[in-house]
Image (cartoon, rainbow, N blue to C red; front, side, top):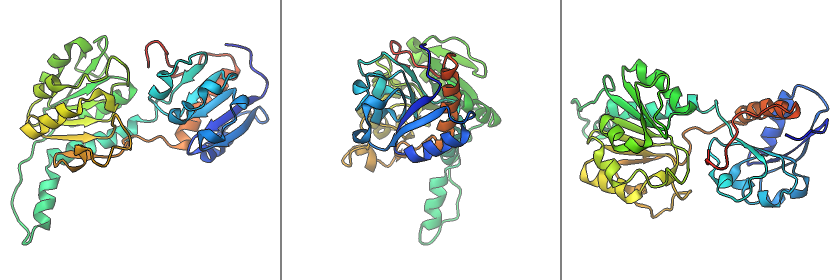
Length: 320
């Protein structure tokens, strides 16, 4: 890493630019060594000639980063960075945000797993029926079930303690299939269908890479159990939409909770919107706060100024 100037010149490009600037200023440990030279909310407002260190939402940064000839390091505000990793430009350090999404993903995943386990929609329907209906509804407790997680990074690992509190077994799927603490078993990506046949419910948290595009296809959904709930909070590109719809229509799958999509916002005419077995949550499963992002940035910026390796760095060749 090249030698840094005594003052760190930072450009911020994010919808939360002002909030990020304030959080960073409050958290910065050494006065007069940080200069936020621009904090803007759209790519049209950024001056690429001033960019040395960029804190940015990758979808916005992707529109201007090719013009930032002096860029040395970009700290993304997201965990996934496909908009930047898919570009040809790679002559800079790219870091992401980790360690802040697990607590939010725990809430999201188990909010919906419990909803279906306790059949909350059925009780709500009977309460709202005229006249109201006093009767039991079938339930499918989580105890003893197997939760399958596609991807086994820090966010996935944050789900394990909650799953274990419900006495669930947890298995994961990664590229290598190497054992990871907390998982009862980990399968390699080449054993996707073996993994799928073992699960009762499955959460997709895989990164967006060429290797994961379209892997959740007809064979995958056909291998799931009819009582399975499928939750996609990773990337929309992993799903073959028609295969998922066919599985729901044929009863091969109980329900799908979808937070991410190949095209966002999801087009109004897309059949997911009106499907009775689909829940849509508009990419809100684990949204980082300015305070969380600022904390990661300050940690990395301190390391950057000290010429130390940055944390959460992406490999442009691997795509994650």
